[in-house]
Amino acid sequence: MSDQRWTETLYASYGQSFRVDEILFEHKTEHQHLVIFDNAQFGRVMALDGVVQTTERDEFIYHEMLTHVPLVAHGSAKRVLIIGGGDGGILREVCRHKDVEHITQVEIDQAVIDMARQYLPSHSDGAYDDPRANIVIGDGFDFVQTTDQSFDVIISDSTDPLGPGEVLFTKDFYAGCQRCLNPGGILVTQNGVAFMQTDEVANTAVRFSKLFQDWHFYSAAVPTYVGGIMAFAWASDSPTARQTSLTELRERWQATGIQSRYYTPEVHAAAFALPAYLQQAIKQ
Ligand code: AG3
Image 1 (cartoon, rainbow, N blue to C red):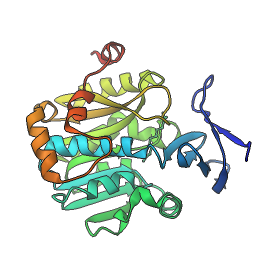
Image 2: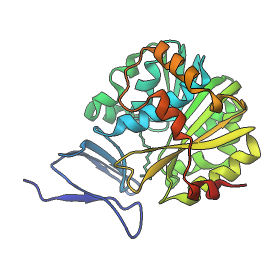
Image 3: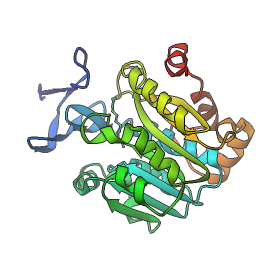
Image 4: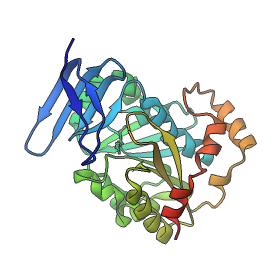
């Protein structure tokens, strides 16, 4: 048995460690270090620059919550934009919504898509071949500033705000998203592990409060985004989408016919309840 270990370096004084059972892919340049390895507990793990991006065993929690919460709350989304998300997990979940007619995904790096299709095939699970999916290799920040398309739901599945992912947490990026949201549209973004990265949540709150009529956060615990609950940011000019009643959520979810492993209408409604330390952090 291998005794090689991989340790996350996202935080200076604390980090989870995995036994590396087999390295399947490694790409190391001056700027980037991407690794995919097998681990008995979490299956295949993909890490970028010392940060776990996704694992086979717990990815469903993150991908279901970042997809079904905005889509079910919207209720009639036809056009969806995904920023990042090269592993295909979000695309897979969006494709499960039969009423969605068009999906644009803007991923900066074709290599991430190719690698994920090869080494993490259950993430996209064929979604890259869905005729509704339109894949753009490019910069998500530029896309939202310049596109003449508009969308009902925008999902930002980014890395942490370090390096190339940083622009996807700026006020200008959020303003770009607002620019290409249809009336009643919803933007959701991954916003870091709330306890470990509380400043990220606080910063987004300031930026959203200047732009959107309604904004808030919701959460889910994803084991390999270690340190407690992951925060997802929510922004919309619809004051009501976030307040959709449980009865309505149940009806809509049942109508999709989707079999989920984490998302339920009850989890959806409860996910917007925030612990007091977060309420304080986002208070304007
Ligand atoms: N994107 C979010 C990774 C966040 C990890 N960061 C952390 N633990 N704070 C993952 C891409 C999944 N499609």
